[in-house]
Image (cartoon, rainbow, N blue to C red; front, side):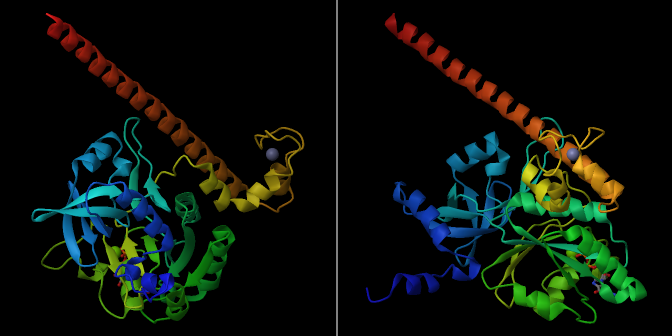
Length: 371
Ligand SMILES: Nc1nc2c(ncn2[C@@H]2O[C@H](COP(=O)(O)OP(=O)(O)O)[C@@H](O)[C@H]2O)c(=O)[nH]1
Ligand SMILES: [Mg+2]
Ligand SMILES: [Zn+2]
């Protein structure tokens, strides 16, 4: 072959969808051990019992038995938007044989004791958190979305949307957002005037995957359409027409004309933060820094002596309300962590019992055969 490896990669038909050496290696590991001829594909949207995949042509695929079984045990393992999968042809149908290892996963914490986490999006490079300039901002919500994004393994970026509606308050709004954004960059944009769109568009690199996070009405779809220069997503404007209230419930990976992929997660009002301490720590890295200077390593940042966090509040270096929100999210993450642990233990017990039953049945059968 005359082409170099990098050329071959650049010309791979899945390159526009984010095909990378990492994904290639993950696919090879699966393909080499399979008895079937497998092809790599990216999941655009999950559907009942299967997925819409890009091969790169869009196709519908069903879960192969192994994937179905795995999804029953742990729904978080089912193919979701953004996943890389290995598929194969079976008669007229496509079957998803395996979900490849994820580089990141945006997880919605299961709230009920027995409920599972839901993976909202996989293999995401960046999360674009949209917060409308004319309604707030709601810093508690922003911190929650930031925590979710950091916990996913993707990098958060904040868009202060509808800048044209904020009037004189805009600088104040942006300053407030920046004060809680931490390591996330803040872009101020208006889908209506076009302000700030070029700067944001420059970050949407070809082959990168972005997830939009924000409440309904924050201007996510309008922003995507404005960046794309055409209507890729339905916006609030069409609501209330003859078709009635239109709310998108599908999480579908779309490709922007510039080559980046975006995924909207509609209808997000509030998401419980996952039991991943790293997400909270990174969101509140300012408090984390103070906490490292506390006298005791296990400081609860309460009334004990030598607490650098409490001292920072006293000295006006840290907003007491931010400290309160930090404590709340830390407690929530902890609660969700122990809930997840409990669920794991229970599942283990169930599996163990099931295995036990299989063994018992086998013994019984064996005894039966002896006669
Ligand atoms: N003035 C103004 N209105 C906007 C802007 N972006 C969105 N909107 C309006 O806000 C409403 C909700 O927008 P939409 O994109 O559907 O929000 P989504 O639910 O987050 O996708 C719609 O009526 C939009 O026209 C903007 O930049 N400026
Ligand atoms: Mg929308
Ligand atoms: Zn302390």
